[in-house]
Image (cartoon, one colour):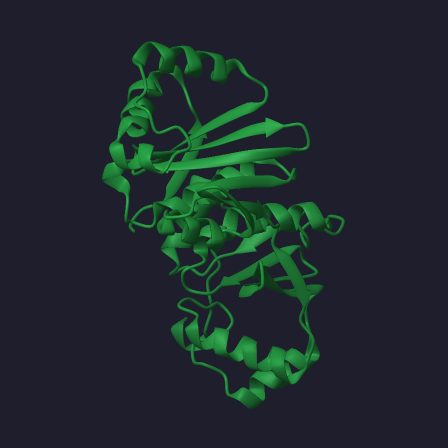
Length: 289
């Protein structure tokens, strides 16, 4: 998958795209309502939905082109989510990014989903984003979304080993050029230099780690295949932690995220989600001056 997925609120001008996607035979087969849509009914529904305070429709875009829709219907104490990727965009890994971007927009209320039992791809997509199967209702599996969970990192053997294996998989780094030895890695973890350092779990699977430093900077390291959870992770960090008080010329008033200069995907992801770049940091070496 190249480029970055972004989402925006749906507009009436999206009616044709939504109608086309929803009437695709494969999309209808995966939906609770399998009958073809009627255009007049669709326009009436969309007009009402765009004015509703309990229904939220987001359009996903990739390189400026619409690639799918994620919807949330708020029902008393929870929201029900549904996801549809445009037929031409299916099979490209867009679903996970679209779903997590939607979750990041909807707030902290519980989220539920119903997925046809034979829709293997959709079930895998939802599971990768933190949804856990809770039961079955006829031809549908019921899922609840579980927020990411954090586990504090401490200098014990299993944590040291897990961090070192993750370090081997890291494609971009700031702190080192060559992989540290296991012994150096152990010594570093024992110093525990961060304000907070945590593993990140999607359901029961560890998918990476993050740290907060005393200068209000954040480092996030996600395992390959889990970059899509970044928007949800950052939102949850901001919800659970407060930045330390500002110190002029020493500590920013807000959290800031460290991104390696070579990680163009992460940079594009942050820009696409509306985060403002602060600076570029250079290494100065005596022999280069």
